[in-house]
Length: 127
Image (cartoon, rainbow, N blue to C red; front, side, top):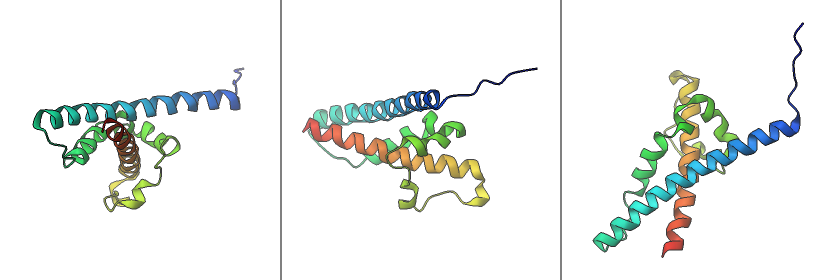
């Protein structure tokens, strides 16, 4: 007879803390990389344009493990400060695209807005 070990609430909360920490580390890393590149280009060109920041965020978030792996994308709603961000965009996948596409697209929008928030803070502090 096999016995099943039940996970306690404390263990579950610890696991969520680890996942939350990992997610936000990824968000901060993406934002910092974009900010570093942006500030270096702005300094080199004596230009402070922010035109391409959205494109850079989109490219970086689109390749994130938090978006491309469905099991991680499912967690983003619990980890993000912008869990409902998909409501602000028209480009959400439809039911005919399948549930995986909907999940990863919703995670993309949430993470995009999280990265944007951190990036805005970094760039504001750098001025």
